[in-house]
Length: 165
Image 1: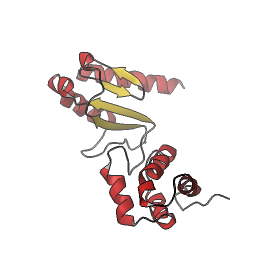
Image 2: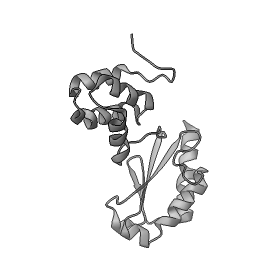
Image 3: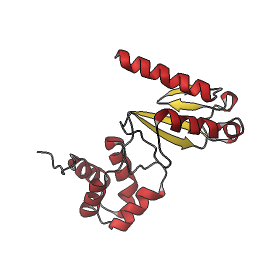
C-alpha cells in the first residue's frame, strides 16, 4: 500500500529515492531531483518526509530546495512557457513579450502558473536562439521573431487546437 498524505502525494517515492541515494546530507540534491522529476515540483510534505528519512535537518533540505534554480516549490502547469531574456532577446523586446504573456494568460504580478494550471511561464537567461530573438519556447517548440501580436496569435491557435481535442 502506498503511503499518502491528505494531498495525495505518494511518499513511497521518497522511500525509493532514499534507498537509491542514501541518508547522508550529500544525498539531498539527487533525492530532490528525483522528487521533482516524479511530481513536477517539490511538495512540502515530501520535503518534510525527506528530513524524517535522512540525516538532514529541515533547514538543510529547504536550503537546498530554494538555493538551486531548477527546483520548484509549486506545481507547474500542463505546458511550460519559457521566455528568453538573454541579451539579444532583451534588446529586441523580451520585456514586451513577457508583459503580453501575462495579459494573454491572465497572470497577476508574481504569478507564474495560470489558475487552470494549463501554463507556467518561466523567465530564462538564454534559449540559444539569438538569431530568432525575441523567442519563447512552449514545451519543446521554439517560436521566434516575436512581437505582441504574434504572441497573441500563437495562444489563440493553441486554444483552437486544444478545443478540437
